[in-house]
Amino acid sequence: MDSSGNATMPCGFLLQGFSEFPHLRPALFLLLLAVHLATLGGNLLILVAVASVPSRPPMLLFLCQLSAIELCYTLVVVPRSLADLATPGLSRGSPISFLGCAIQMQMFVALGGAECFLLATMAYDRYVAICHPLRYTAVVTPGLCARLALACCIGALAVSVGLTVAVFHLPFCGSRLLVHFFCDITALLDLACTRSYADELPLLGACLVLLLLPSLLILSSYGAIATALHRLRSPGGRRKAASTCASHLVVTFLHYGCATFMYVRPKSSYSPRRDRTLALVYTNVTPLLYPLIYSLRNREITAAIRRVLGWGRQGHGLCEP
Figure: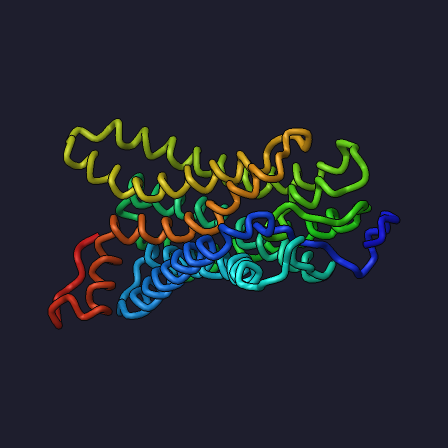
């Protein structure tokens, strides 16, 4: 490839993937394929289950959007990775066009950002349900849920487009070899010819909007929830209210923990092979875990899934939320 450093060249990049481990590729392909199929099946099952519920409370609508995001999230990255693993002769890596790499990165950031905003929205939903239970149905209406869901998508899309434009305006030099299996931000910044801290400002700005802002909203919501739970005199009521937040807290810690470790750090600490291994986990395992965590702890989702699968008796009502 040309090493002139002109970032506008159409030659694109070379995704190394796991081409340096030819003997592990068949086993890795089968493992990723199994996880991918389980992720697709689990998220599709939740979407069908929610669609089968006649009256959908707001939390089910948010869970439906979460499953849709995770479904698209894994489709952006995993199918190409599987195709590269299954293609013989890619000893150095798989070529990807400049435009294709930009689109993949933009969609990956947009979906991840939409999930950040959605988790903040779900924290607000739990805040209203616990701190203002009598006003819950009047405040969290289907119309508000739809507007919040749209705002999550539009906000994340705007940030992702801005970040993608900033990153792909940088000059790239050398072999254009990405030691990764998809076009991740950190891998692309590592290829940039310049070593100025100004190159990291777009990523820092995106992290402030996609990570810091939603996390502050989540902390505010749970601060109010903790205060409300402290005032409850009934230990049983306190445990019941806290249990409704457990799934959301677990998913929030997983999502923000992975994103913060991967992207909120200086460029000098980037380790290509370590980050590639971690990315393998958060792009394949976490999209499978999130719906599983919610479906196991949400009785309405569990009842709907059982009805869709034919495990429940006909006419059996949904559990109380």
